Length: 310
Image (cartoon, rainbow, N blue to C red; front, side, top):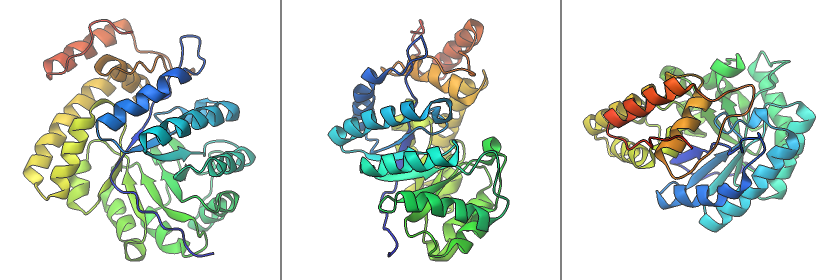
């Protein structure tokens, strides 16, 4: 089988999973969520990633939310990427087959999280199994060492993978190590797409030639992230630096109050029309004092935070 092609570039929003107060999935808001992002010019969606709390859901729930997003993205004509990893291998294979049967645009996969691979070859062998389960769907590897505690050099990995997985097209690179990111970008004559997953170094990544990003802040600040990408692509590095500083300031006043997901969910409900509800256990919502501080800080930065958190 020849190598699959994969042409999507630009921004992908890793969507937050909406939960009701009792912890059940709030599926009703997803069509509105898709439309909100589409109207803002965001053409790509990632479901069940870190920000989407995919690893806090059952296989049945992950399938269900994927099915609802497939329907919503069909209506809005958005590129749909599904994160299938972070579960036992039989479940990952089941999720890969499920995503392929729904004709999603791409799948993203974490490494095995318990019996971790220790070499590029072992990682390749793991991803080969996923590729065989969904041979017609472009496959990307999800590199997020601060959460997986698994840190094979991505440049070396991409140089070594060869043609072993015909569906393999690239990685999501959630790291601040841009030296490694640049090597990944250049691997195999720039054969692979690299989606940077770090909200605070987009301008620097653009200067290295990166053009694709999966950033949680896209959900909350779509206009700002689009402006930042445009400035970076145009080589207007001073403008990119200024926009990056604005975005980073907002991200810092949000995330200083706790875990990435719980703080971003709070900000999403404060600053947009989409109420994504509470995070799922073991995560908890932030304290009322932290919420008050976040509202004050965001207001001081010029954002119209709702005074009452829904």
